[in-house]
Amino acid sequence: MKLTIVGGGGFRVPLVHAALLNDDLIDQVALLDVDVDRLAVMDRVLTGQSAGSTRLRHSVHTDPSEALDGADFVFSALRAGGTASRVLDERIAAEHGLIGQETVGAGGIAYALRSIPVSLELARTIAEVAPRAWLINFTNPAGMVTEALSAVHPRVVGICDSPIALARRAAAALGLDPASVEPDYVGLNHLGWLRGLRVDGVDRLPELFADPALLASFEEGRLFGPQLIGDLGALPNEYLHWFYFRREGGTGGGRGAFLAEQQDRFYRCCPSDPDAALAAWDAVRREREETYGAANREAAGGFERADADLVSGGYEGVALAIMRAIGRDEPATLILNLPNAGRLAELPDDAVIEAPCRVDGRELHPLPLAPLPDYARGLVATIKQVERWTIEAATTGSARAARLAFTHHPLVDSAATAVRLLEDYRAALPQLHYLRDDR
Image (cartoon, rainbow, N blue to C red; front, side, top):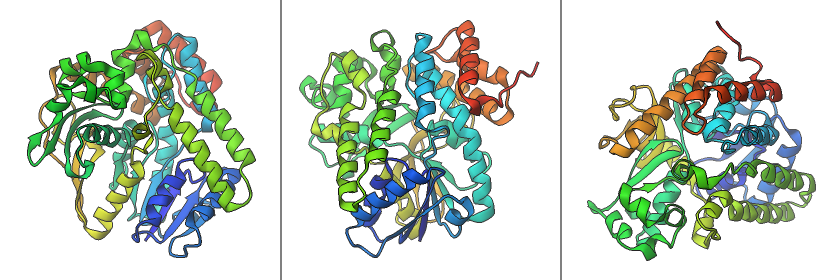
């Protein structure tokens, strides 16, 4: 089977490649990117990672039709405008005193306004070149992009590593095998809660909530603290720290600039020898993981990430599980971004949510959900409406819809600031010039 990775020069591609090396489902990987220099670096890293294996072949491409031809699966990991645009997403928000995080608040809206049009163009190309391929969306903001894609592509699913990472860390704190637990997780992408962790039908999360020492043994427990976690009766996704500790968190707008400098250094200085290239990539990956979420950890009192927190959240494992379930009819229950389909009464049926689903060789089956907790209903409904205005703006070019999205996001909460944000983003980001006033 053939897998095409769109954004194939991206830094996290070796994580997916490593998972594929340990499985025999995929035998051909096509890397597609507009940046030939990054593609050349990833070519060296994957060659080193293959260590002489001839089973899994990879190729590099700048022509979409060539890369997508014959694909069974397509992973979309686009970053429209590159890391430089991420820096602007975050910096402009911070200049207005707002949170500068690429998928949360103002930065997330700006990112989606760039990601959605390019992703829809990709979907049209897939429909022409590989109409039977499944499109697995990694492109952030994953929920919004997947919702836009689901309206035009019959075989699309969005994935994120945050929910599975949270469930794994909670299971490990309880001494449980993560493979043996059934997580009850619900929400939107980067806005969800783990409210149950069942083993043989018994929810083990209450044991975790009753033991402050266990909560303090992993990242989310330290980020949110036993009091808030106990009040909620659930473990929040790490990105909810920006909502629950808005005043303490500051703007946190430096992550994009850090990664831009780090990645520029890596791609410019990556050794030509494949083995050395792989070692250099792994060292940078370790640094990247160690510094992830630094602003939130500082706001929570300051703590270093434990070794268990540095383990990949597993988005590459989720992607492989989807492909195995579909390609070999090996059913799996996974936390995915799919249309609501009546599961949450507060949201339209076509609104994409993040929750457990059953995947097999025939289709993706959204699993029934308990109602949203009372503390989540208003926030989820508000953020979903912001997402839908953002999708409207991205698909119609409506500046009005973009202003409504910025205005009503709880982390912006100012119509005057929303107007200035949109003006500043349009001035700084050529990809947003398509937005127009429609009055």
